[in-house]
Length: 256
Image (cartoon, rainbow, N blue to C red):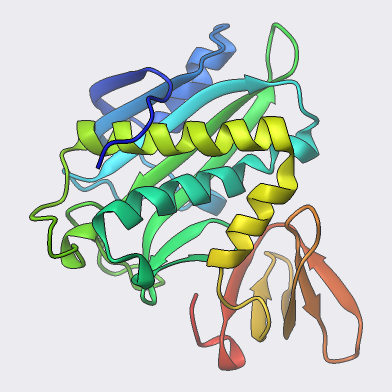
């Protein structure tokens, strides 16, 4: 179950959220790379301001790092994070069950296992700071969520007898992230996008996209070179979706 060594890991017993801790450190001048991991979050956050339920025993980790990439290029790190998280899950769960849902949710069968939240801002030393937050349900899945969720412990490989301790899971994640980060920085985005597409389902079928101010229904037609979702509307127009809540399947009632 070993993997290459990633950035250093700071393990906290509790924090409000690992992303918030990364932001505070970045705004104080820290540049990383540093993984901030908490056993418990008192105010975890998901995408679009949602609460991220923080059950004890699950992994809450944020990579604080900096980049000289443009903001548009830096946003590609969400695909790096999805691949690294999927690699972690595939060490513990039969890989045939593991997929990615656009843009960065890692799923087991049809249930969400991993959530990712990327935040950024200008760094005092130039460039951007990135806070790449990754939450993995190792032992417990939240209930009452909009979309069904599951945990690693419910899908373990036969040879894996229990979900790993947080410290071990963080090390594995950091190792896989380091591999994908190096590929992104040395080879560019295309190899990352190709690997992501190979694991992603729903990119060529019915789709509903909630964009906050509007809801669009149509047919997904793959992704652009930057990872934006191509959505063909009933009137024939093509919309490119860079962010939003997307549901795949018949009438949008499939994988959410």
